[in-house]
Image (cartoon, rainbow, N blue to C red; front, top):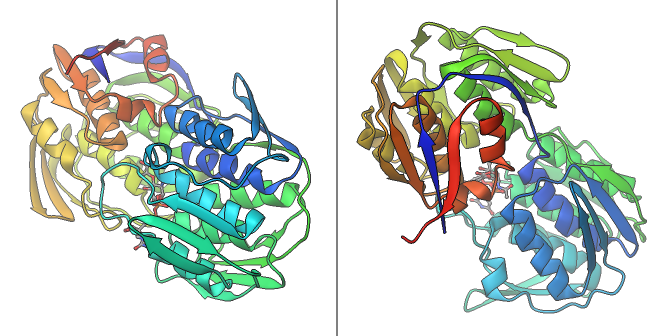
Length: 420
Ligand code: EPU
């Protein structure tokens, strides 16, 4: 385990270059096993979630070469082995091997995936999709055995526009016989990025980025080069930070269109922004105004930015209400913020109130999940004095080079081994 130590209260300025999207890369890497030839993926973030997927690929017998942000995956000799629970539990996205291996071998055996504890996180919609394609799903003591004689295209309506289910069904359907239509599909930028990757390999997918995705099955997927889309959640996290203590902080290598819901909220709050083709420059205003946030599926306000935003709202004048509609357990950062001097209260599992502005003071706090960790990093940088964030490994799962990126813009922050 690691801890992050921050000496807060320093104004930040300079450029923060955004890495490839975690939630896209963690789907692209398992998707690569669908190809019988080598594929190359660029702009892959160097985060521990990718290391865990690499471990699964190695276990299956793929040849993986990593060089900076580039990963080459040759799955031509992989075997269909059970993925051990110790590895699949390391991250949520291990579930993408379900769709990919089912498509490739018509059989997959793996345990329930892991991931941040932010809610119940069922996978019923993924399994319902596999069944619609003709697969049989057995759940034996938390181990899923999914088999199919043949996968056939089907019409699948998702009860909820789930990111994971949409991607997993695309993976399972890409080589199925006939046409699959997913309605009420998720529309996040990573859905489009995964569909583009599959199309670059020869798949026939249309409609990604809308609520109806059509997949015409193909027999063969070939080698390709593909790039991970910039991480709009990483970008949003640094934009929120810059809105509190930034002076001309440039968040670069981004697609500003992906951040429209955040940009609109920051405008309501009073943050001036210069928006370029692939960057946004922010200087913190003298005064931040309270606002209300309701998390929604894309293009609504992203749940993954809700916790970082909670820290900003502790510095805004007035009462803000956050309504979290995606996850049931995504307010654990508020306790820690209160320890640092914030005034927040949970009104229900899905609603919280924050009254600001309150001065934050450095304290010893604990990251309970990835974005709660990001919320505390922002709080530590804003607070006076020293903040120690235990369980920092959660943060390393999703933010490439966070310590270096923040140091480059003037933060006093370091990562250390923790004995706790
Ligand atoms: N849901 C179901 N059944 C399912 C699948 C989802 O009921 O079979 C429910 C979930 O319980 C939740 C909602 O649908 O209430 C949304 O779940 P979704 O499937 O969209 O989320 P996910 O695929 O598990 C991904 C990201 C999350 C991000 C969400 C929402 C990955 C690996 N994870 O999770 O990212 O919060 O989409 O955008 O892509 C993070 O990066 O911090 C993170 C948690």
